Length: 341
Image (tube, rainbow, N blue to C red; front, side, top):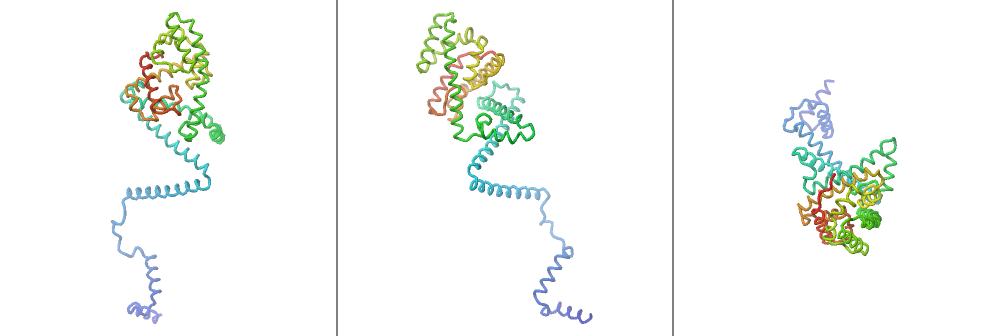
């Protein structure tokens, strides 16, 4: 025992008696087992708890982005068709969330400053109108998903019937064009019925001059001639009172108008009349706000959307032609009184 102690002491003093490998092993053992022996580390090496949390969040976000990128590349490589649908769905959710935040900001501003809907600027008014329609469609899907395991059926229905169940955020670019064409074709189917109703009410018009103007208007439309602004404004009295005032319309006439405005016609007459009044009032308020803003201030997409809402299939029409048509519409709309609600 004494001899071994002397050998270790000599090794510690001379150093050459201990092989380098054994020395390193002993140092590692001391480091692992005796961290508390050394001098305390400087506090500069430690971050504050807030900085630790920030660095951890930054690390998690970075790693999530890397994993998400790999997942996207995997889907795009092995499942290209599914990846297209997945990308559209995720972008649609982002756009819908952005719309919801903007709508909430507008509603908060309205509440703070006691602003009514018709007092809003055009873009905010149009955003709220469209967002309400989108939310109504989404709520319908939410109601369908309430029963147990019904969400799987809802996903299948969304895939099979995207036009009926999904909003435009979740349509592909090709679907947007095709579906808008389909909706406009449905509107066009109601045009003959509306024209027939106009011809039938000609004898009910008491003024002979108005009768002649109505007959000429129907003849022009049957020949495919676009009526001028003064041709329509000359008949404004017929549409504000008997026989074509909103309160004097019959059920068949209201159903035809509902189809032309892409509103459901399968409602009782009282509800049809209320929906038509509400819809036409909102469009008239939008027209007033748009006239204040000016058609020239709208982007190409905004012009096409405004024309489509008012009955023109703008998907295949040049932008300048759409601006001209929208200007004529505003000229007519702003010359009329607001519909009675």
